[in-house]
Image 1 (tube, rainbow, N blue to C red):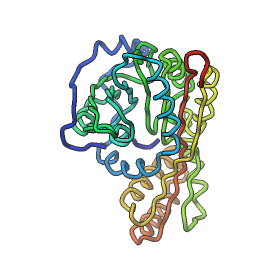
Image 2 (image 1 turned 60 degrees about the vertical axis):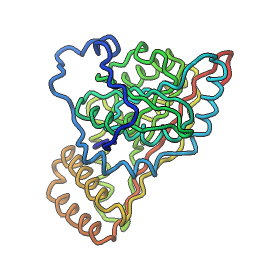
Image 3 (image 1 turned 120 degrees about the vertical axis):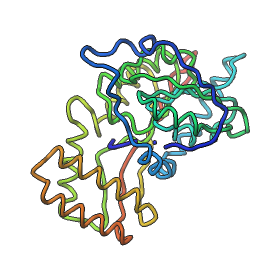
Length: 316
C-alpha cells in the first residue's frame, strides 16, 4: 500500500514491556541492512484512514473467527485469555477495531519496526473487550519480514492490516509457516487487489492504475498478487482460507482522505512511469478539484482473509 493505520490518546490497560532481543524472534538482519533507517508511515495519514478502514473491514469473517476461538478455548482448559499478535500495527487501529468486537481477556502484542508508531499504538490501546474484560498491550519492535515461528509461541490469533501486498513471496511463506507452527488463526485485512473505480471516469484512470500496480510489484513485492500467493501458502499447510471483499468507498464525506489518497496514488504511478508526469499533473489537479467540490467518488478494492488452521483431531 501507499500508507497504512492511527493514534489516539488515552489510557487503556497497557503493559509497557520491552521483549527480548529482536533477533530472538525475528532472526538476524539480512546482510548489508541495518536498523538505523526505519520506514515510517505518517501518523497523520494513519489517523485519516482509520475510519475508512474500520468501515471497510469484512465483519462477516468475525463469526467464523469467534466460533474457531470458542472451540479452541473449549479444548484448552486452563488457558488464560486470548493472545493476539498484530503485525505491522502502525498506530494500533486494528486493535481499536477488533478488541471491542471479541469477548474475554485479551493480551495484544503489537509488532512494528517504527518505535514512534509503537508509542502511538500503546497510548491509544483499546480499554476493554466486548464484554468489558481486560485488554492489555505490549510492544515488539522488529522486521515482520524475518518473523520466525518462535515469535508466535502461545499466540491465539495473528492480525495484520494493509500488509500482505507489501510483502514478498518468501515473506508470505515465512508468515504462513509461523502461523502453522503456532497453530493460530490469522485475520489479514485490507489487501489491495489492483482495482480502483473513480466516478466520473477520466481517460487517464486506467493508465495511472496500471502504473500504480506496477509500482506495487517493484522488486520482489507482490502487490495485487499477494492474496493468491498467501492463499496457496496457507492452504498448502492445511489451513482453510475464507475471503471477503472489503472496499473503501470514498465520497464527499471522505474528501480529505480521498485527496491524500489521490496524491499518493498518482505520485507512485509517476515514480513508476515518469513519462506520465506532465499529463498526471493535470490529471491530479482536475481530480482534486472534483474531490473538493464533492463531485468525485472512489472505490478502492481490497479483500480480507481469515485463515483457520486445522483443530487438534482434524477439525477445521
